[in-house]
Image (tube, rainbow, N blue to C red):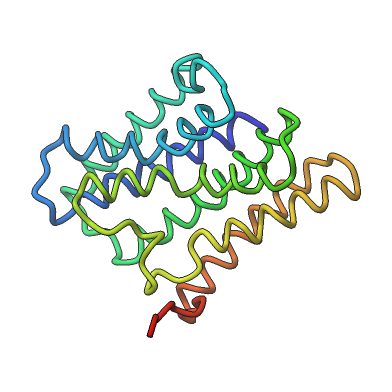
Length: 202
């Protein structure tokens, strides 16, 4: 996986983390902490599950530095300019697309079974956001029915990516196809309110 993709994933998730602090009366430290757990949390959980020690941002501090710098810049801009209402959702969607395939590809590289690789993609994409939302005392986005095709989008894109890798052999274009599918599914779901059936027990 090219480093620029991983850095971009950390950056967009850091942006969503800072924007998630809006309305929570958090200071600079609180907003940056939300940004860091959003940017680094999913990959941390993935590495722990796969037995990778130490986790990625400890062995390569550039991930931490980029996330921190992006968070600080976003905090400064957000205090001066009003971001469009959908900025958080769009930034989050890009984070899902990038981290979803990053996690899946890393698991495949470590010879994980197909089902585990897809699950690691989902975990990498959503775990940071779950930690972020718990810290701001809200139900995580992944569990809200009105958020529309959240982890499902990652599952779809990661599944196509794995299928292409296993049937056609490793090719860099496959990761971009997987990312595009995740992003398209998530943005389409946001636009047209696409959702899975809601469980209502009797």
